[in-house]
Length: 113
Image (cartoon, rainbow, N blue to C red; front, side, top):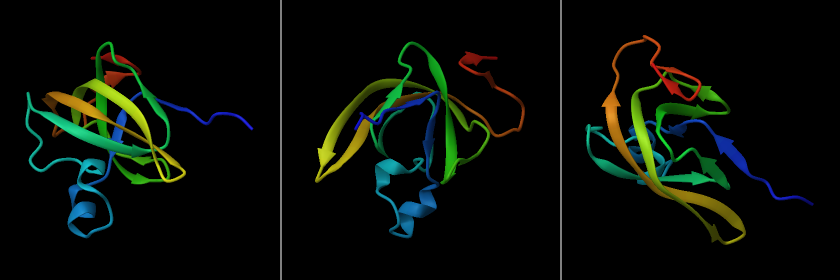
């Protein structure tokens, strides 16, 4: 038996509608409105590691690897793991640097364009 750890090059959260429907917790979803310069909490199931030394994309996910193009550039300020029952969760804070409303490329891997 090993330790399951996921390394994420981005932060993928659910649409805010999922919170409104009662399907997800608020911190699992993209805030409405998403504002440049503001800091927001996030919550992800599983033990996840994020890059902390620069900007990464914020994506909208529908689950099962169905990801949007970047909707923002963010900086992860804090990430920590905790147990809820027998399940590992990752929580933390991110700050919005820039938002996007187009379909142009804004990242090439970890490199912001």
